[in-house]
Length: 53
Image (cartoon, rainbow, N blue to C red):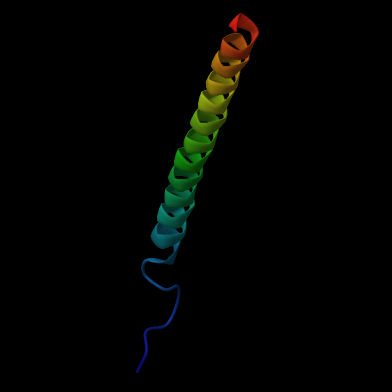
């Protein structure tokens, strides 16, 4: 017979999933910001190169 009452690990699993999703989203956001920053730097360097010549 199944146990009565609340399932054992559901609260813990929910918290863990929430924290892991937060961590994954943070890493994605950092990667995206880094790409945008590098694109801006490259664009600025190319503009300076074109203006110099």
